[in-house]
Image (tube, rainbow, N blue to C red; front, side, top):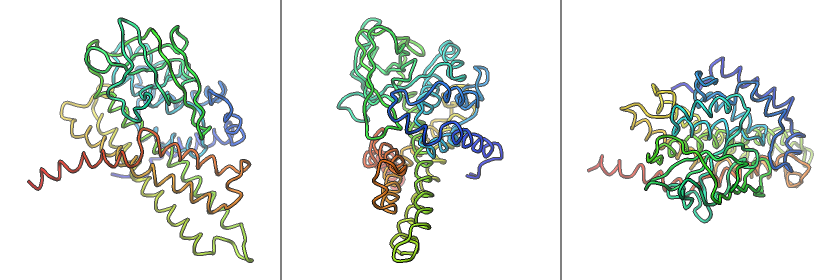
Length: 391
């Protein structure tokens, strides 16, 4: 497995980085901190014009039909710029959900608009007092209407369509709900990280279109989507952590104490060395998780269904995503915290940008479960196989 990016991927990286520097610099990010949508129509349209909103969408539905590794290049650059827009929630989570759960008709109706950016969507899985537990939702289908509450829904205010999980027919279903329909109430949720927009979605008899075949349990398909979202979050965090490290190293070279750059002091050198070690380990885990997600769908049918003999690849993709999140959630947060330490007092001020990266990494640490929770999941995955091998 080669972790070097191809020429095309490097060109994509340069294009996205240049776009963000010109159209969504830090001044833009700071304006968006107080905007519940987290984006402007101009910037979102600019990303769509680059073609990145349709990277995962199959070509026959207006997209590029490429994989998660390519999307990871975009996500890493968005993280480097602490970009607050709905790319991950719409172009990754929502597109992946439609591909994994939806029927051919669902894909034909939803994917073209998601690909060209004319519609944004988000995935609503989490509920009050259930932390990262999404498999048994309290939200229910009653007749042909949905009732329940979803919390920490990414980019909920910006979404045109909310893909809602709900209990129905003895299993789990996913429903496309018009965010402006009757019986739908969306309110922004303030968090410590203004670059990540979240909201609460309350459904009170809201109409929804069920994705996929009726009476089909979507739990396994949604599990595949969650793994892709975990990998995407880690790669976004990789970009933010890398930018924080670069800022800290540059500051250590120019800030003087006792007549010397503080980077010449061993304590600061150790901090930066530890940050670099964590960054590179996290990078390997993140891109392996993206590669494993693509391999799990190798030879698929344009959705995310595994090939007939692909159960091992799906299991490996889950293990890789869990492992990447377990490590990066805490390791990348420590990079942000150490960057603050290198900056000292100025790093705590609102005027300096480094705290924005720290807060982005803080929300990564908590997203879809803590490091401890993912380590427990990883142990459940590994230990039975170890016991079987030893038996």
